[in-house]
Length: 481
Ligand code: NAD
Image 1 (cartoon, protein in one colour):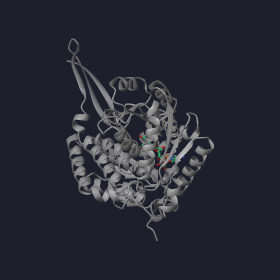
Image 2 (cartoon, rainbow, N blue to C red; image 1 turned 135 degrees about the horizontal axis):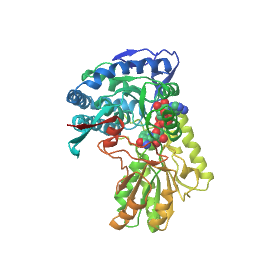
Image 3 (cartoon, rainbow, N blue to C red; image 1 turned 60 degrees about the vertical axis):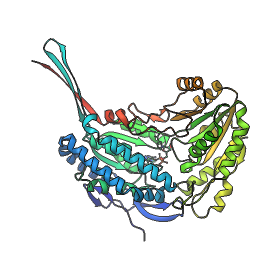
């Protein structure tokens, strides 16, 4: 019998009020790891009340003392690095080395948040008029909620709760129901670091929990990361209910390859960006735009490199490509491969053949389509799997125009040796996170994670100074002496 997970409320494991639950699978073996409760609004209400009670004392805890708990937490995360990475691989399927890197990205968020005493500082101007001065002070916003996706069980929650908590807020997290295990471990370790009970709470479940959060009058701000339709829904509902909201959404990232690019580097970077983490990254490269006569050689080299990819259980050494997250997601991916053929794209590598040989688990091999046209569904939709489309154009202008036609605008990359090309790309591409001669231009924790268009709903992005602004509100005082 698999274990039913509990919610984490007030520093204790609390069973959900609901008897309904869902299986949590190891996507590499299809083994059931645990049962995740599908909690209800009753559970959300308990967690929010608990967080609200904890807010008074936590928000008045001196900032250096809060920061010291984050320093301790950082050390505990470092001490548990390998175990955390194994847990990521177990429930998500990505390779252990990717998972190890993901844990690092999470730890970096805690390191940034530990700078709270500096980050929380206000500003003063001693003479706004004769004998008149003004000052700005920064305060937490209250009970913050975070709703996270399956693809980064460590990094994405760590974009949210460490900084929100360092800023003096209390937190209710709703992890993905497909990857709930790591979140529980993160909460336990934070308690071990000295976090007072009730400051961080976890409610497991699916849309009922999300709706409970969006409707709860005592939740003041919501951070969301997930797919585009849900991000749009969360943004509209939370803001209609008077909450601050930042909602990071889906993507379709284009990588432009110029004829002067270093092809060895380009192929290595694109293969990692397109097929690493089984293409289940919001910064994955899903479209290559090949400019001019680089196309034939590039396609051949990409296919050769894709053929060399090792596929299997990410826990085993030397495996590069693990499974996608679930059976239905695999089926959806296979349908997109069929659709690409019907739309007239040229299937130059068919990952369906690897699915059969990889064994149990939700495997799809690296798949490449050449001669993809903008407007085809395989170009337009986020497939979120190891499927790469190649579009051929003649000039950089046309390449940028192709990328800018996408509704999504999370990231974009350029491979070139020309500074002029880089400048044109930087100035005219419609995307929030750019890479030059690298495949995954994800910013580090001290910069904002800044998608555009339908890849982001809101104003202030996650992380960096935007994160601090999002999790704080300001008070102005003007004084006459
Ligand atoms: P998802 O939208 O299915 O789920 C995200 C969260 O929303 C989960 O906690 C889930 O329980 C909840 N949810 C799902 N459907 C809901 C509904 N109908 N009503 C209310 N809540 C609902 O996303 P996912 O499949 O877990 O994650 C993959 C997606 O996340 C991809 O689109 C990816 O691009 C995106 N993502 C974006 C970023 C970014 O920074 N922009 C980062 C990581 C992932």
